[in-house]
Length: 254
Image (cartoon, rainbow, N blue to C red):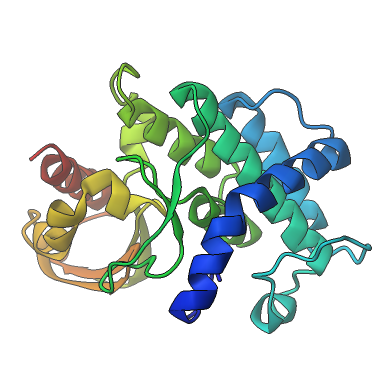
């Protein structure tokens, strides 16, 4: 439903039609379960840590999220943990709804090339599906990443909405994260919503933008939010990260 291959069209459409109601019900449970306050970005760091800490707890929960499957169970997620993730997704959706002044308009993505094909997406430019933002950052925090990543993604999306102001410097810096793989080889990670941040046209040019950065000799997109680049000798991680950030920013501001 949300992860893995898309469901058949009829089943996907039925799930999308029920998704807003499922989130409303889960939100009430989540708020009571973790003691969440008002839906604001400032609360996301603590809530994300709570969810990650409890992701494998075995507790009774009804209903079990419909998208919970064996792949998540094998990764150590319990049904209760998946329900917490769904609750955090509902909470993030409320953060956006509060800014918009109306409930999020969920629709079924029917575009075959889209990474969200036959999955529920938000019909608001600049906002990637909150479930993708939450599931992606939960996995990243499980791998040792900073819990502030979810807040950064949400704040960036909020900044794209009408009247929300410009992108803050710390959000700009979060565009690119570089990790050394081997001498002259680097893994480049982007925010989970990089495709929404750039837009479809600019995102299609992302690989070329990376390859064109000063000192980069080759670049290959390995996944939607991850690339592998090769560089000349003598380039350190911080310098490369700065160069790639400028390249991606220029692509976005195009």
